[in-house]
Structures are given as C-alpha cells and as structure tokens.
Amino acid sequence: MEGLIQTRGILSLPAKPIGARRTLLLQPSHALKQRLFTRNLPPLSISSNGHSKFQSFHKISISNKERNRGFICKAEAAAAAAGDGDSLTPKVFGVEVTTLKKIVPLGLMFFCILFNYTILRDTKDVLVVTAKGSSAEIIPFLKTWVNLPMAIGFMLLYTKLSNVLSKKALFYTVIVPFIAYFGAFGFIMYPLSNLIHPEALADKLLATLGPRFMGPLAIMRIWSFCLFYVMAELWGSVVVSVLFWGFANQITTVDEAKKFYPLFGLGANVALIFSGRTVKYFSNMRKNLGPGVDGWAVSLKAMMSIVVGMGLAICFLYWWVNRYVPLPTRSKKKKAKPQMGTMESLKFLVSSPYIRDLATLVVAYGISINLVEVTWKSKLKAQFPSPNEYSAFMGDFSTCTGIATFTMMLLSQYVFDKYGWGVAAKITPTVLLVTGVAFFSLILFGGPFAPLVAKLGMTPLLAAVYVGALQNIFSKSAKYSLFDPCKEMAYIPLDEDTKVKGKAAIDVVCNPLGKSGGALIQQFMILTFGSLASSTPYLGVILLGIVTAWLAAAKSLEGQFNTLMSEEELEKEMERASSLKIPVVSQEDAAPGESTSQLPEKSAPTSI
Image (cartoon, rainbow, N blue to C red):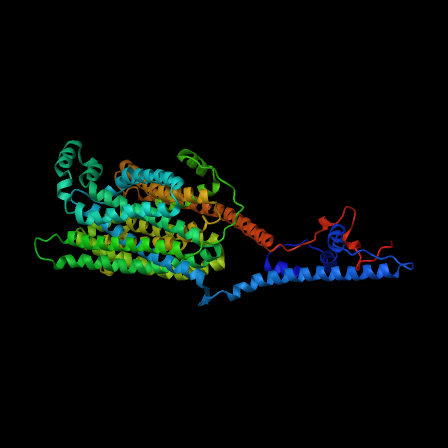
C-alpha cells in the first residue's frame, strides 16, 4: 500500500523500517480499533466455561480485520484506477485529444497574430522613416513621447476593465478596436493623409525653431502615420503578450506549457516566413502599376484587408476554444486577493519581488534591442532610400527571421527538457550581448574592415546593414523561441489577480518603457557627444551593464519560480489525496502512551 501511494505521488508516509511500516498500516491504533471492531457487535453469550464468548469474539475480530483489509484493498484499487484512467484517455500521436483541442487552436491563433504583427511592423517603419520631412531619427522621440504615454493609458484602462468585465468580454473589447482601426487606416485615413497632415504648419515651425526640432515636428507633421506606428506597437504588446498569452495560461497546465509553448512558435514563425513573402510581393507589385497610380496606397489596402481577415479569424478561434474546450483544474487553495483600484494595483505589483524580476527582464530586453535597432534603421534608410526598396528589404528580413526562429523553436524543447527554465531564460541576453558587440565593433572600427568588405563586393554601409540585420534576426529568434515562453511560464503559478494585473503592467507598460528607455539613452548620447557614432563605445558599456542586470534578475526569478511550482504541486497532491479519501494511520493517531511497535500482531480476546 505504501509503495503504491508513494509511486502515485498522492501521499508521503513517515520514513520507517519496513516492518514498522507494515505494522503501522495493518495494525490500527487503540482509537481506530474501537471504531472498527466494536461497531454493531452482537451480544455475547457467556457460558460457564467461557468457550462460547471467546469463540464469538474471535469470529467477530477476524471478520472485522478482513473488512479492514478489504477497505485498504479498495483504496489501493481506487488509486490504481485513478492512474489507469490516463491510459483510457483517447490519444492522437501520443497526445490526449483534450490537449490537442487546446493546442491546435492556440497555434492557429498565434499564427494569425504574428502574421498580422509582421505586416504591421514592416509597414509602420516604411510609413514613418520614408515619409516626407521624416527619417529614422523620429523613432526615439516617437517611442518616448507618444508610444509610452499611450501604453500607460491603455494599461490603466485595461486594469479598470479587468475588474468589471468577464475575460471573454475583455478579450473582444480590446481586440475589436484594433481590427477596426487598421481597416479604417488603409481605406480612409491614408487616402486622406494629404488633407489631414499639417504640412504647412510643420514647415513654418521648422523654419522658426531650427533643424534640431525636426524629430518632434515630424510627429506632428505625419501624425496619422505615427498613430499607426503606435497601434502596431500596441498590437505586439497587447494582443500578443496580454490577450494571447493570458488566454494560453488560462487554459493550459504547467506540464502542457513546458511541452507545447515552445512549439507554438513553430506555426507562428511559419507565419513570419509567409508574411515576409507577402510584404515582398506587394512591394514589388507597386513597380508594375501604371503612372499616376499611388502604388503604396493600393498595397496598403490589400495588406490591411489581410490584417482585418486574420483578426476576425482570431476572434473565431477564441470563441471556439471557449465553447468546446474545458478549462484545466487549478489548485483551489489560492490566497484570496481583494478588489483593488488602479493605484493599489500598481503598489501591489511594485511590492512583489517576483513581478519586479519579470519587469526587469522585459525592460532590459527593450533597452538592449533598441540600442542597436535605431542605429541599424538609420543605416538601412541610407542604403535603401525609396519606400519600395526599404519595404522589400524588410520583407526579406522578416522571412529570414522566421526561418531562424523556426530552427530555434525546434531546439528550444530540448533546451527546456535538458537544462530547465533557468538556462533557457539566460540564453537570450547572452545572444543579444554577443551580436550587439559585433555590430558596434563594425561601426566603430569600420575603416580597418573596408578592404575585406570590398573583396566581398560590398560597401562598408551595406556590410553594416547586413550585420545589423543578422543581429536583429538572432536576437528576435532567441526572444520568440526562448525568452517569450520563459516569461509566460513564469505567470502560470501566480494567483489570478496577480496574473491579470501583472501581465497588464509588465507587458503593456514595461515593454514600451524598455524601448523608450533605450530611446532616451540614445537621445542623451547624441546631444552629449554630437553623434551616434561618437557615443558607440559608451553605448557598448551601457549594453554590458543592462545585460548583467538582466542575467541577475533571471537567476533570482528562477529560484522563486521553482519554489512556487513546488507549492503548486504539493497543493494538487493534497487535493487529490483528499478526493480519494484514502485512510492513512500515522503514529499520531495512536492513543497517548501507546507505541506502534508494541501493537500486537493479532487481536487477543479479552476476558470478561
């Protein structure tokens, strides 16, 4: 019995010698003997020689001992049946059908979401970088003074809505405005951009204030493009991080997450490959249109139609899973959280070391990737000044990112199984550090590399563009295949209140905060040292410090995550044992002063 219970992971009995354990299980305590052996006893007839009374008691004792052994055997059978039920569950390719009904729709949702995100990400860069009166220098100002405030405002609104709406209503309330806006931009706002953009006012202010204000004035000049940029950024933060991963954490168990979360990216990165080809196709299609036709407007309508269609598919998949897939059983012994207002929620999240470490991971990634991304995009515009060429290159870039990430996804499950959560969480900062140093080194020491680059048929500018592209590809592939699954797994053992509000604060605010932090660092460096190239050595030092803090937070979070997971598993085992109601007699059940080792092997009849 003990071996069966320990094997099934239901209860853990005190460590005792084999004989003592057998005695403990088979010989009940004095109190238990009173309950088992004296219940409903028939009256004893006392004869002169006492033979009848002892014979009757002996029969009753044997009968009740057999009944006790039979009860223990029934408990063993119940435990065995609980385990054998797993083998009766229908499976396909070794995976339970119930699990497939969750994993397949989630994979399709992730495919649609990242297909849209790739199109939106490439389109937003083309709009703001190649627009008249704008350049890549607008990006730091845009991320700091527009994207971050809107992200904070959305988080506050989302926190309020999460307290009054159901999860289903909250999902639709958030995603439908995104779908409507992108459709309206392609068919209404962009065709009217010449009418709604204050070009004359921007030119007048630029002549008055001087060229150093070109970045802020460009935000006003092309405000509708900047709004599209922010909405595209929020799609990545809100729909990918909050809506999708929050829904995935809601319907999956930890074991399913460890096995399938890395595989979600396989379908998603197939989406990257196909969406990159889609952007490349529409970029080249503009060349075949007749004169006088705004080819970019035609392409934009087609791509925004695809975005709307994919958005509706996401809503359908979400509806189907909620209707036909049962939710997993969670531990019921969760610490109750009171309803909190916005400021109380923020104070609660800031006071949690677990949430702070998660926030450090997200902010560190945003700052690190931003330190090299803006510099790379400025080189990219210098190499490909026209929107057609710029967009076509970004399409190729997205395709290569998808292929690299797909390969990393195939390796990620091995990393999780072999080395665990902690090692997987530390790979992304390591990759970003190595590739970032290579990119900065090429820019800083480009002169000595010029002869070698010339032999490869490239200019130093084109070489910098390619090295920066490789840096972004490797960093993003490590993020999608390892960093994102690690971050989302960390939410699973949290209680529902912390999970919902923590994701809103971290993914919606900390993500743009990291990007804005990188932008602020770049702005400060440019103003201090005169140019981005002059500040490159200092940016390298800053990158090293940020990655060091990132690795320290990952190590701290690893210990907290393992502790929470151990508590979660213990609570589930206790609930499972309680539901089976298996009687376990421990030493504490014995009467005071009675030793379990002194219990008799047989019930001796008592003289009357």
